[in-house]
Length: 122
Image 1 (cartoon, helix red, strand yellow):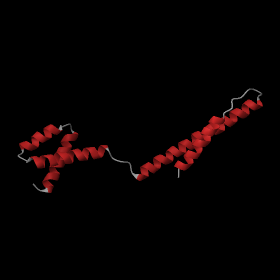
Image 2 (tube, one colour):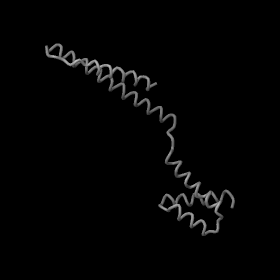
Image 3 (tube, helix red, strand yellow):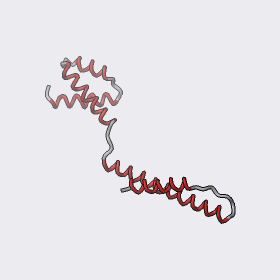
């Protein structure tokens, strides 16, 4: 059996597999066509590799870069909100003569998120 016939069978059984045919059914059907076991295994392996390859597609470099940039932007915005929000809260409490919570931890976290976001957005 030549490579063109094998590729046609792979495409045929790939469509059947996507429509719900089990691997054991494929093997029985291929063996009923008097194909040897090596060819049958080759066809089933290629169908399985195509399906698994589609499931485990790795993201491209551009997709990863865009993901990092969007995470960096989100970190910068949330860090700025935390930093300036805590500063405004402290100023509000100070000018209204009420006790205020020292929010240095929150300001430090906000600043750290801004720095992390800046590094991720590059």
